[in-house]
Length: 185
Image (cartoon, rainbow, N blue to C red; front, side):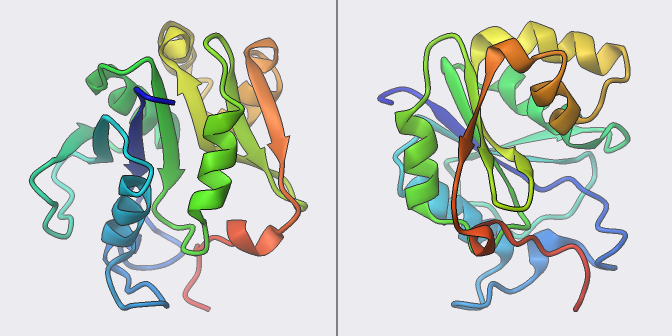
């Protein structure tokens, strides 16, 4: 994929965690989860690198080449996806959430290598679909905006139902790679 953008979704309210996940230390090196995920995406050489956050959300200092995009924080990850896609000028957008500290570049390479011009592709772990580990073609932006306007806010439901003909699931065997940090324990 010579021309794609990549974004970290970091705008969640982290209610179950009790603190903003973007600031949590990564278990491997103590770097914040947000900066770790940005570094992971940077290894893929995206044309643009973005962070989707809530308006007014304090983030760790971002590298100068990272574009911050905001939404009001009331409509979940789909609003962050739409904000990032709107800000991107690339034909595809790779998206990952801030709270998957075990995600690897190999998983992301697999997704990118299976991407087509017209269909999105998302990861499926042995436990369940991973709707926020996804590559979306720019052509889906209008569909996502319509879903947002109609309060169809669940990417999981969108990929599996109303947009199923435009999305491809890609299974992975290692559930550990998709272990998210939602609670302090």
